[in-house]
Amino acid sequence: MAEVQEHRMGTVPIPKLLITMAIPAIISMFVQACYNVVDSIFVAQVSEAALTSVSLAFPMQLLIVALSVGLGVGMNSGISRRLGEKKVDRAEQIAEHGFALAIAASVIIAVIGLVLPRPFAGIFTNVPEIVDGCAIYLTICCVFAFGGVLTQAGFSTMQGSGDMIQPMIGQLIGAITNIILDPIFIFGYFGVPAFGVAGAAIATVAGQILSMIYILAIVIFRKSNILHPSLRGFKFQKELIRDIVTVGVPSAVMQGIGSVMVTLFNLILTQYGTTAMAVFGVYFKVQSFVFMPVFGLCQGAMPIYGYNFGARKPKRFLENAKVAVIICECFMAVGLIMFQFFPAQLLGLFNASDDMLAMGIRCFHIISWLFPFAGMAIPLTNAFQAVGKAYVSMISSFLRQIVLLIPFAWLFSMLGGLDWVWASFIAAEAINLCYILYEFYKLKRDQLDPMLRENEG
Image 1: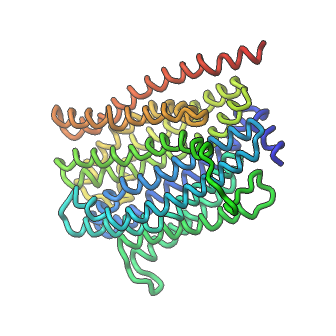
Image 2: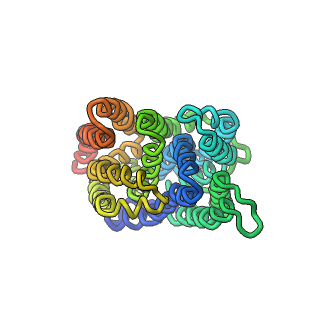
Image 3: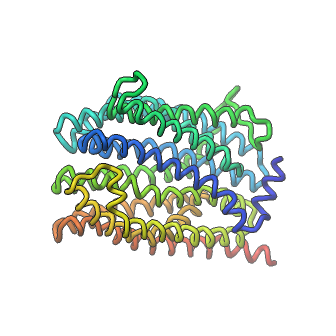
């Protein structure tokens, strides 16, 4: 079975291979976007204060996602490269170490969830309804975060070995559960009390736990898997931990920077009122429907990058990058059209007031012009993660979201109004793309071109 999978990633024409592997991941990430948006749509029907509570909780949720995704990227990269090198046993051991790290991460997140949510909410507002809603939402999501963290470890084990279908099914199970349970727990149906904001968190973690049960059963018990990880008799090996952490930590930091960015950006927005923060929260949720398919495509591309880099096939590596950029730009073009021509309809899903609608339309119109820049930068950044150079991706995230964006947003808020603050996203994304193009040129010159000459010789 392993030989068939390795042969497929090394020989099937790239466009067909990428599309075949990416479609399940795109569906999975689109489903993940539903997690982000459905809670907010239902909560918005309760009140704008409830919506603001969930929006303020988003940065800490991003930290949980960052830890999970960073661990998953480290596992995915390590597994795919070992399979490309024909080291199946080492790939399996990387999966085992990834699950051990996932368990440890879940414990850390649970402790954080018992301590930090209320002080965190108090940074932005002293409105009791918003503080209480944000705190209870975050506490539930953190204490039961093990569902999402272990699910991601299982997804990455399957994706790293080329199986994109089971992660998609697992995501669907979680999303459908979340969508069904949201109205039941938020508004109180079928004899269940109306929990409000807390109900949205309960529905979310319930969906994640069901996903976890499904994917762990597939990883552990399905005989046709390439890898069969087991923690029985497990012993830590420093070199394997280092393998995961070298790629995973920069990837986690890259994701976690988003949490810091949202927090700092919300602090800048406080001068424009809580409605501006609610608008930004809604934008971030809705734009995930544009970015999540792109991230899904990159999940499908990563094992192809990693396998062909490990197998020393630079032509396939570069073709994978080219096809990924073209498809991502198509996604971004659709997103730009959606945000330019249908912002009112998108905001209407969140029961937007007149003030929120007016502010939100301007926000959507302006920020969405960053999409074409991101459509090229994201798939090229993904290539560095696949080859173990995740520090490039980390530097890119620092540039785009902290070093450039926050100073631009602060400066623009001094020079102009709120529209200028939204425009800071475009300036940061354009400069970041220049950095990524330069680093990709160096990767090609220093590593891929020598491989090409070696193959031709």
